[in-house]
Structures are given as structure tokens and as C-alpha cells.
Image (cartoon, rainbow, N blue to C red; front, side, top):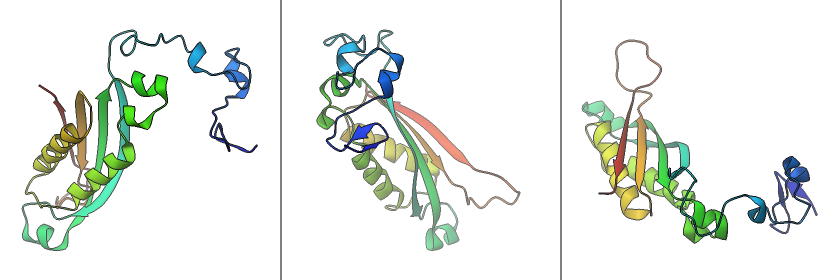
Length: 165
């Protein structure tokens, strides 16, 4: 059985000597995690998060004609705020936000309808994420690394958080 990053070829998860947690090989970590099935979220009541950084695509956003005509790269970072306990205790993809689908959604919006402002792009992404995924809130950061700014700069970005009512 070959192991790659803690996963074996049969799909089972193995952790080196259970990282000193006293779990023997083959024993489920779920049973020893200290998390009681049926209790909501983390002990503090705070939501968990899924983070996806660096979703990149060419877009045609901006107020100048050359930005609309030639396009430029945009990079988006997303943080989903949700309760990951259902997925963590069941090990079922259907009980979490599928980050492959999230990446595809965001990529399509970046390359889709042009906006004058990256604020409008971020707002559109946030609305789409809230509509498509079972999350309580989403943070969206849109980077415009090639913005037409006359002085040297490293990055320009906007970040917003949107929540369900």
C-alpha cells in the first residue's frame, strides 16, 4: 500500500503514529477527535472556513477603453464561512462546499460580463457564491495586479464580506 501525503491507495487516511495522539494504525481519528457528533460547529460556536486563494483569469474590467479591449489578469481569493462539522463527521462531499465548483464559478465570473469597478466584480462574485453554496457568509478579495496606475505598486485589491440575511 503506497502512501502519498497521508492518504493510502485504498483511500483510507493514516497519520504517522497518529501524531502522538495515541491512535493505532487503522483506528478512525473521528472517534478520538473529541468532537461530539450532533453538537453544532466548534466549541466556541464560531463558524469554520474554507479558503481558496489565487483563482486567476483574464477579465475585461475597468473604466478605460484599453482595459475593456485588451483585458488583463485578475486574481480572486475566497473565504467561505460555514459549519464544517457535518462534512467532517460524515466524510461526505455533499455536506460541504465543493471548492472545485467554487473555483469554476469564480473563474467564469472573472472572465464574463465586464464591470467598470472591481468592487462590482467582487459584489457579483459574493452574490453568486451565496446563491450557489450553503454558506453563512463569504469574503471576496479581487486583486487587479496590472491596474493602470502611474506609479510603481505591488497590488491593488478590494475585499468585501457578504452574509445571508
